[in-house]
Image 1 (cartoon, helix red, strand yellow):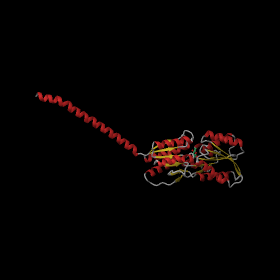
Image 2: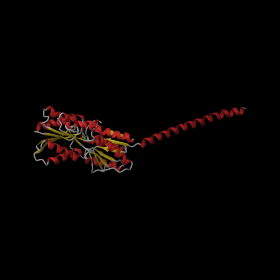
Image 3: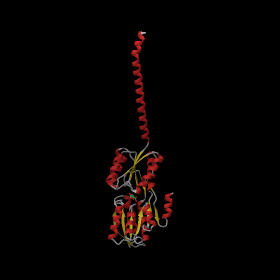
Image 4: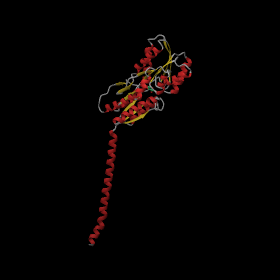
Length: 328
Ligand code: BGC
């Protein structure tokens, strides 16, 4: 009996120790397995980055919405980023960061083709596909471009303005920036039409630096220094700035305005017959398509080298109908 009690006293702590070890081991195992499982699950989702021209810009908010809707629909993670204000160096830095953290795909605005080419090609060489959006870099190795055919849109704007001027008058241009290819092409397409009209003269071109204040200042400047019959505005905030100045100087109806995009203020100025026409792009569709095509590419499908989203001219004749279709 004594022997039995003695062996219980010796064995009991030993058994307890074995239990404790097994318990701790299985807890650790479960824990690491869970962590491993979570990590795998996270890695299953693609992580795409969308780099915009300027954060908070209402046009880019629509690009963002389209992209986020597509990301939610297909189940990928989308990070929206960009400079707070139009800034080439910051855009380049954001692409470099996206490469460094090895995202699964980069969708980016291109401020300047020459300066963006090396970083786009670097991403491609590291196995990260790049889709350009809104403005293109066709000489780079980007896999696709999603956006407006900007030269063609510029010619459409030119034809509308030439008609409004009945082939005669002085034109001032307010462009968002001088560098981005999309805005250059909108100016080039416009000029190609104006060349056919010997009595239309382009008297000045100024950059708004993609800001409403900039557009307003440049409209003031052009109108103060030239005898201008029309303003051609190449990016979304420019026709709004131009309209404000035209109204403040009591020139509505006398100075024609043709612009880009369908921001609510622009449509309102069309209704008030201050802005004569605008070319509505499809920023929502751009964002939406870009994410879907990036996903297709990741899944091994072939995608077109460029996907052109259409533009629609809006004037006082169709603005009401247009607004209804946009609201639906
Ligand atoms: C252009 C964009 C630009 C935006 C600025 C749009 O018309 O397509 O490139 O960033 O205007 O508001």
